[in-house]
Each structure stands twice: as structure tokens, then as C-alpha cells.
Length: 217
Image 1 (cartoon, rainbow, N blue to C red):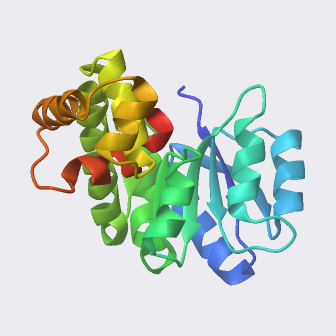
Image 2 (cartoon, rainbow, N blue to C red):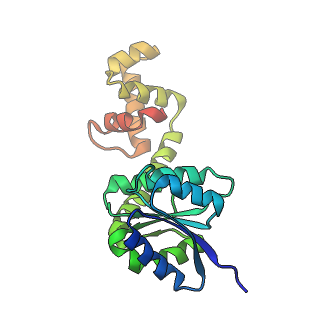
């Protein structure tokens, strides 16, 4: 007989929590091994009976769901995490996904989405409600863009990176030339090579790129 997947629910609204539990336990693959109405209690329940998946509301007393997630993820055998939230803002979604969590379910759709999210997470996939999927796509796009930009930076010579770093400090070619013991024309050549390698166009494109990637230079 296949062992049931153990679920912990954190939500401070008893009626909502009970409804979620009923939906979960109606599926023979899952069993709710613990419930909590605040973050501290959730950690105590998780320690007493470690879950395979923790379903955590963000906005709860004592410790937020995100703080509970952080602590659970540091445990010896961390559970998969599904965040429950009434917030569909990009900043909140990104904060959760940065932890990282395995799922983000909007409370408006929780009863309908919860089993789909559990199945996805139990199989090693991620799940987000349709209302926040646009942010996930944006994260992937930004990640791909950063990866390409890093490849571009790696293509620069040591001197080109030094020039780019000084450009990020808003220094002119004349000042950069003086600091690096080069001629202004040589610095301008480095600027042109940097722009070509990074596929940057426009008079301020190199400066803008340098500012955005200053920490990586």
C-alpha cells in the first residue's frame, strides 16, 4: 500500500483551514498531519510530525508564512513549500520564489487549485496560480537575459572590464585614459569594442549597462 503524503496547513482562519483540510483529505494520496493558526505553532507541529509538504498562508500571527518557510527550509529534512496568499503583487511573489518555495497559490482559488498544486509539487514540479503565472514568466525572461548578459561580460578583456567599471563611475574618456595610462583614443576604442561585444546601441547604452552591472565588474 502506497504511503500517503503528509501535509501541514498553516492558516489563521479556522473555517478556511477546515475547508482546505476536507478537500485535501478527500484525495486518498494525502493526509493532513497537522494544522496551525500561527507561525510559532506551525513550527512546533512540523517538529512533532514532519510533513512532506507544508501549505503556508503568508499573513498569520507571530511568524509570517514566509518566515516559517525560511526556518523549515533550514531543517535537516525540509518539506516542500506551497505558499498560500491573498497577495498577487510581483514583489510578494518574487520574495516567496526567492526562498525558494515550490508553489504559490492565491487564496481566492485555493480550494480549486490546492490538489493540482499538491500533485505538481509531490512530483517535483513547481506550481503557481494562473493569477501570478505572468510573474513567473517574467522571472524566467529576466533570468535568461541576465545569463546572456553575463556571457557578454565574460567575453570582455581585463582592460575592457576596467574601462567599463570606470564608465559606471560616470568618468569621461579623458579621465579614464589618465587613470589607466592610456590615450583617450584608446579608451574610445575600448568603448566601441565593449559596445560591439555586448550588442549595445546608442550613445548612452554602454553607460547604462555599466550602471546596471556595476556590482559584477
